Image (tube, rainbow, N blue to C red; front, side, top):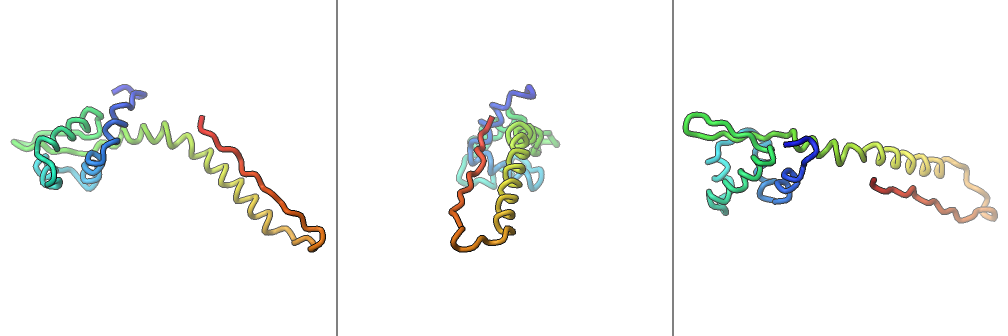
Length: 131
């Protein structure tokens, strides 16, 4: 998979059953039979189709051990999504939260003005937009 082609990963993550399979594999590698047994409401064929989508997205790696197939979680594609979509916004959110904190603290630490000269203050939160 190309480094910037994350469409198969998004497709794989869009389904709650596939996310549940990934959650199961996060606890440790599982044979295909163990995964099928963890989803009794699905047929073996249904689970296999979900695993195929996860493999195509490179989210699941499968190796053969004798007659069994052992499936493991591959977190690298999720990390690429994080770096592309979440990581870029961390600094933005951190700086915005710091500004809000500073505004709140400056309001609290200033001595109160006499009742007669007190004016209503309005604070405008910074405009946060995603690029």
